[in-house]
Image (cartoon, rainbow, N blue to C red; front, side, top):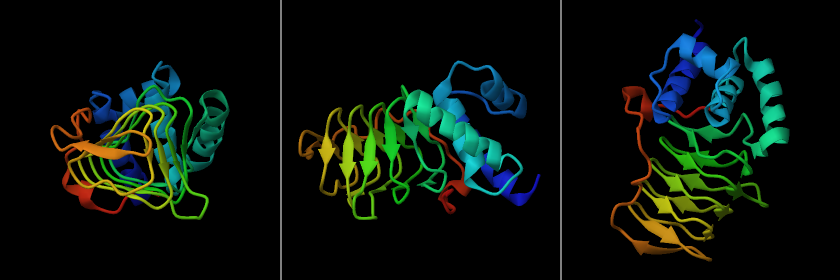
Length: 194
């Protein structure tokens, strides 16, 4: 394997771990060919499309199919760390200028957007609930939970739970608790894919 493909495989392994799957090449191929888990399958295609490798063009084609079928639109040049988890993947839109850390959960109907060319920077171990909108250049800290239906227009500090429209911090107790099967690796601190 070339260096780019090795790096991509490390990201794929981290994503599989988040879905409680022991990663191996046969299992990953099984997910791509016949698995019913379209969220993990999307994540694998996303990773394969993100760096130069022999699978990049077919992976980009598959991402376009998922955009039509499920409404998942995460551009292949988006910076996303290790351990991406897409829950109930439908209607997810992420601006390519967003930066997403390690072990992030994206729920259905999530939008991370920008009209001004600079989307959010999201830390590690962040849970983003269903129907959340994160608007423009906000900073989301590490170990944060964002409740369903929240509209985030201001920064959220580390270790906080935020809810509401507009989102406000309501607790510093048990943040990020829905981020399970976290990827732990010495390479997790390296540059993100994208």
